[in-house]
Image 1 (cartoon, rainbow, N blue to C red):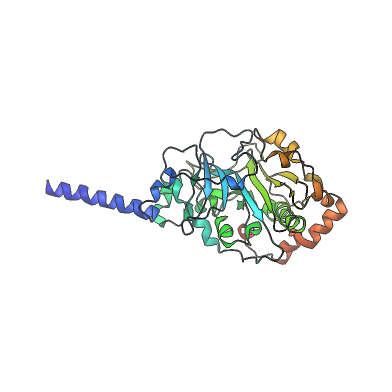
Image 2 (image 1 turned 90 degrees about the vertical axis):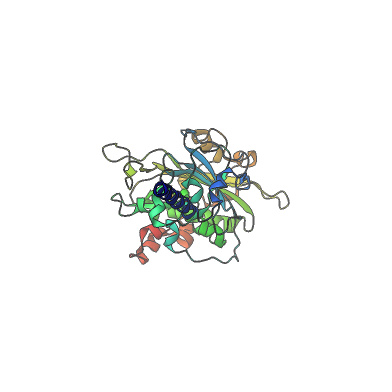
Length: 352
């Protein structure tokens, strides 16, 4: 009897210690019960719902990191069933004089949302993500509801870890920049799409904010849509975990809202883009930009932004929307093809 009690007690201690090792904090497992709010990253109604998205498996993540747990960097509507984000919402303020931090080391991709490691029932209210590292032998305990960096390694589809809220537009804030390196803010993105046209679209977003509305708040949402298929029309997944694959989205989209400034008389403006996730080399085009109201009418149940932006035209952004001006802007700031040619040995997963 004493022997049996000793064995059972030892197993209990091992289980408790394993749980502590998962969270690196004995109270961290309670974080999903905490009341948090990250509505500041939305303009208008928080957590708008896109079309074609079911509530099953969705979780609202207020993205933070364990080492800076008191700072929320953006908000992500995440699908634990598909193991990719539906979208990430961010509030961006950029300064022409702001210091840009170098790109972080790729080891940050190995972190996980510690909150999603042990949560049986997904709450309807937002929860903190608590991004942090975890012991290697315990990583699989976190894989049920989120992707792991191992899922992306050596995939035979030429798929990168595609940031939603990218490193570049957050690089003036070190905590926000580090916070983008989480697979709850990334989805499988074909390397050539990632490296060329999408890279250019994201550069245009960053650079036009700097030119048009420096030091002012701009709301940027980036998301995934639909399913990618192979040549035989079979749905594509990363099979890093065959029983729990990571969905490859068919499209990526971005919506930008500048709500205006009554003090300076600056009128609201906004735009959206949606591009197919395919592994071909293309350049960003000025013809691909949509008015927010037209984009929302097709792809959202709820308006993604408030009325000021949803009723806005392209506004001052309109000046970039002709072939000559746009091509010159790409040449001056965002020519991804030249960047790619000058760095032929760069790791494609580290371009963003």
